[in-house]
Length: 399
Image (cartoon, rainbow, N blue to C red; front, side):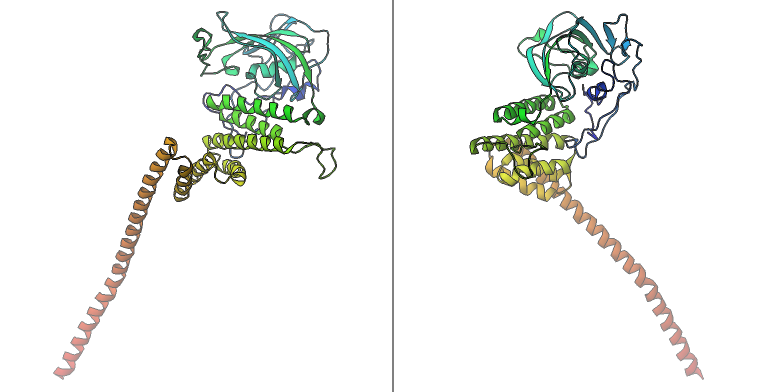
C-alpha cells in the first residue's frame, strides 16, 4: 500500500479471505496473506507498510474448518477472540460473496450497553472496498446469502483508538477502543461483469460512493485507506469501457458529451483529493502524478496549483513552491491557507538564502586561509634565499 498505516488506523492489511474461500468452499482459509496496496496512493507509490501482530494461521476444527468457540454455529475468525461470528439464522443457499462482489446487507451495530450506533437497511457494498468496518468486511465472505449472523468486533477491526463521534446524538457516539456487536443479514450478492457497468448512472453512483467513503477515511487520518478508495472511485469514473473482450480501439460505452464532461469533472475532484492524501504520507512522486492529471485539463485549478506547491516544497524546491502558491493566490485571493503557507515559504526561502550565503562565506574564508597558508612557506623560502645571497656577496667582497 507498500502502505504506511496511520497510528490510529482501524484498518489492517489482512488476508484476502474471499479468494482463498474458493479453495475451501465452506472453510476459513488456513493462511492469512498480507495484500499489497499500490497506486494506487497514495501509498500508493511511495507508501510504506506497517504490519501488526496478527496470527498467520487459524486453528480449524475438523468439521467446520474454522476456529470453534463452543458450538458449530460460532467461529472465532482470527483465533484470538477479536472477531467472532455466530450464526443466528442459517441459510438454505450455498452461495457466498467473493472479493469485489456487490453485496446487499442489512445490519445494526451496538455498544456493549446495547445502544445502537450504526444501522443500515439494504445497504450495498463492494466486498473488500472498506465501505464498512474491517471486521464486517472480513466476515461477509464467510456468510451464505440469506444468512443472519451476530458479529462481535474488537476495536482493532472497528473504529480503533479514535472511535466515532455522533454530532446528532451524543449517546450514539462510539468511544475509543470499543468492542461493537453487529447483527448482519446478507440479503443478496452478485458478481458484476462489464455489462453491468456500461451505464453512466451506475458508474457515477459507484464512483461517487467510493469518493465519499474515501473522504470519510481521510478525515479520520486513515490516509492509506482513503487512497485505496480514491483509486477505486477513479476506476468507476473512467469514461473508457475497460472490457477486455471489446475489439481493439472500439469502446462500446456510449456516453453523451454532457455525461463525459460530468465524469471528467468528478475524476478531477478525486485526483485532487488523492494527491492531498498522498501528500499526507509524503508520497510526493505519486502525488505529483495525481495533481498533473488535474492541471493537464485545468491549468488554473487553484487547489491543484496549491497542492503541487506543497509537493514541490516536500521535494525541497522552495522557490518552485512559492511560484505556484503565488499563482494559486491570484485565483483565490481570500484563501487564508494559501496566504499562510505562502508567507511561511517566503520566510523559509529567505532563511535558506541566508544560510547559503553563510555557507559560501565560510567556503571562501577557508579558501583564503588555505591560500595564505600555501603562500607563507614560499615567502619564508624567499627570505632565507635572499639572506643566503647577502652572505655570499659579503664573502666575495672580503676577498
